[in-house]
Image (cartoon, rainbow, N blue to C red; front, side, top):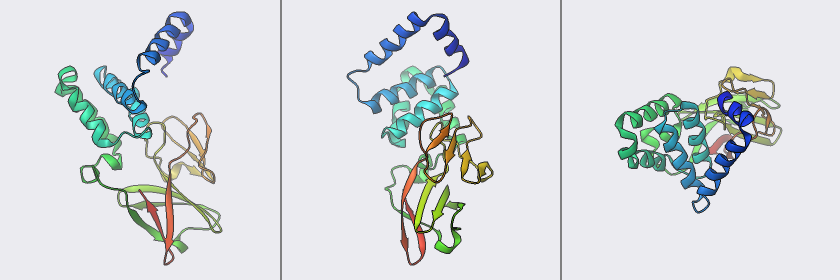
Length: 208
């Protein structure tokens, strides 16, 4: 939430409270994914980059596919116009979300070969690149956890240098995560995305 919006809430709590209540009630008969897609469109309409990224992340988290996001933007063409849709597409390209790459649109989830098991240091957090995606892997004896490097806030790709011990901090808005559990420990309230994994012939595979 922006500083300006926080100011209006503090300055006119009754009016702003009524406004947010209206927005919530107006979507009572819509499923969560549809509400999120509408919110994505409204943020593109006013070209609010932070809001677009926030609601895009929420829509994906609540089950919207990349193809549905793109279709929603194109269906809103009469209202948005081509220039605003291109503006949104430029942000998507800059974010470089793996699921939005043309070769991945509509692709089914499958198992991906990450690395040899002995390349994952015991008691530490390792960083790997696999098929266009970055991963953090925590290993403690037989326990292994595989995390997407993307922050659950606005899908920022968290770099390896952001890792200090078992603490991972997103450089964009400073959400911090405990890589042992994946839980967010500072600023935010959503955990890292964790991928299902398996071992085959002493190689680590992850499913996405």
